[in-house]
Image 1: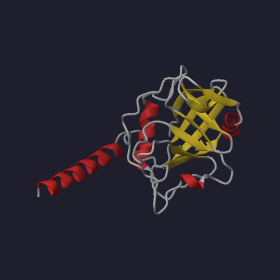
Image 2: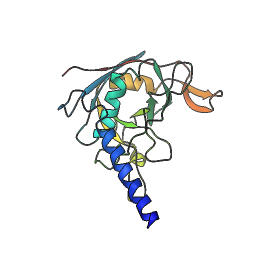
Image 3: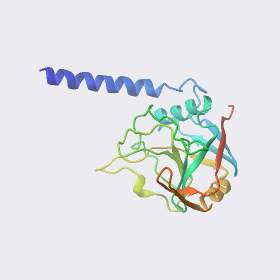
Length: 201
């Protein structure tokens, strides 16, 4: 009996945490289902439109991070030509920002990792996404990052609506290894995410 009570408590706690996450950032442009965020980079500007209807927790989290300047002065630290450009969680000196505030995986929302979409990066734990995001740059899409009957996918929560030329410029920058962090595919010239700005309604 105690075992079942514990399981029930864990399930209730998980549901409450998911509900709390959903409203973390929900007050930002409340009622706007498709808010937009401009990423001002050292290579130019990229405008993202978020899909709050299909990915409310993820979109709200992204808005909250943008509003609180958590993305300002970070870098795109992982760039793979014809795959993804990834950033949002590493400072220019190569230090990873805290990613303890993880969110629920929403990869089953019907949005797929098509060319030009934005999605959340994560570890092997399907619910470990926090702040790092990536933009899909494979023309035919990254189907291997979508969920299927036997695995979780990577949550898509919006798309680039302006600035794909900037995305392409970032994608084609020369990369190499960062021995201090043990990372591969790091741009040889730092690509700054100077600021993430929520566009007024």
